[in-house]
Structures are given as structure tokens and as C-alpha cells.
Image (cartoon, rainbow, N blue to C red; front, side, top):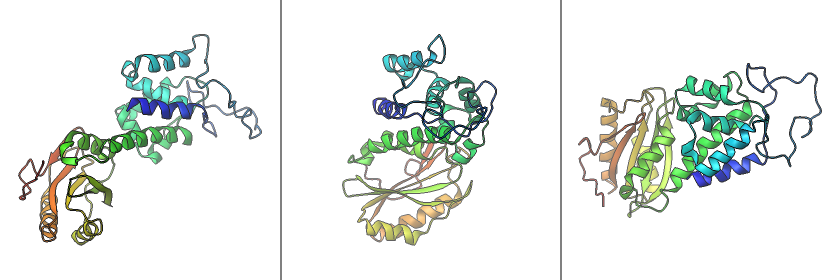
Length: 284
């Protein structure tokens, strides 16, 4: 996974994009120019043939960080250092460490920063549109890598990968999101679709639409998934009732409901494991 992320980062390094307009933030490089500058590559402070991580001083901090990542791997870096390097993409010069630490303090963790909604990130001091774009790029890359690892594999035999992917995709969503995984007769993923988005503690799901879509895709099995923004994956009465309705409806069409997963923060609940689904899972 990290090899592919590094390739993505290297491509982005070749065309760094400084945030503009810049705002003055203590200890940061985002400062307004003394006078308006022409809109050219040289005027905004970079050249396309410049080194991706030029030295910002005699110590060559950025170059050393890059070498450390490439030679010793991402495990050699603390979370704030990963974020610091990510912000290099948005700041041509200057010390990004204070901003990286401030964002982790604000959102609780590196993962929390990556998952933060763009509009919330954008109002943080020192964060401009290109910083937000860089952060969301990495989040999207992580999700796509996790999703790619499930491609053409029997989902039920790769449960840990499935949970990893769903955690990346949904655990830190600020509102409830309901997904349906449609599977073929070999339990391979046909489609992974968001059926609805709701509020912080509720989302509406229409049984008729679930059945209709399953038939359109010729699915023979489903896995239902939704998140609890509170972080607590405990099933509510509404969750249990809705799951029962869907299970009864798709059973008439000879479609199996393998599971309903509730994704929390760092943990999940399986209706199958909790005995809340009556039909055998058929995990084979």
C-alpha cells in the first residue's frame, strides 16, 4: 500500500501547489506578498524544474524528511511528521510542523485530520484550499487502495480486509451513511453503493429500493453497512427492525442477507455474530 502512496506523493511533488491567497499565521509560511504579483509560475514562488523538497535552511529539513521516508519507511515517522510532509505539497517554503500538530490536536489524530470534512478543514487557521485538496487526496487514495484489495475476491473469505476498508470509508463520517454491498453467487463484490445519507443519528432506507437494485444487479447476496457517528456501534431498535424487513423482503427473491455491519470508531458490530439475523450466513 505504501509503495503506491509514495508514487502518488512523488507525482504530486513534481507539481507543488502553494495555497493562495495566503494568510498570515504565526510560525507558518502563508503570508501575504507585499504587493500584487503577476500570475506566473515564477511570481507565485516556484519553478517546475525545482527540487520537490528544497532545503528551507542550512539544515535541509525537508530533504532529510524525504530521505527518511524513502529509506526507512513510513513507520519511522510520527503521525504529525506524516502530516507535516503532506503539507509540503501545499507550502513551497516554511515550517509546516506547527500546523500539522495544531490539526492533529484539533481533530484528535492523523486519521481524524484525513477524514475531516473539507468545509471544516478550510476554516482552520493556516489551511487554504490546496492544503485541503492534499489532505483529501490522501484520504481518497487510502480508501481506493483498500477497496482495490477486495476486487475479485470472495468477500466472506476476506472479512478483515472488508472491515479495514469500511472503517477507512465510514468510521469518521459526520452523519449516518447506509451502504449496500451487492454480491454474486461466488460472494464477489458486484457493487458497493451508498443508498442514503442522513443526520448524525438517523438515515432512511427504503426496502423496496433495496430489492429493486439487487434485482437490477442480479445480486444473489447482500451485506448491509451503516456507521454510527457517535462511535458506538450498538444496534438500535430501528436498526434491528429495518434489517428484519429487508431480510424478509429479499428472501422472497431468493437473495441471502449475509450480514448487517455497524461501523463505529475502532470497533464494529455484526448482526450475524450477535444472532440478529436468522438465515445462515453461508460463509464458505
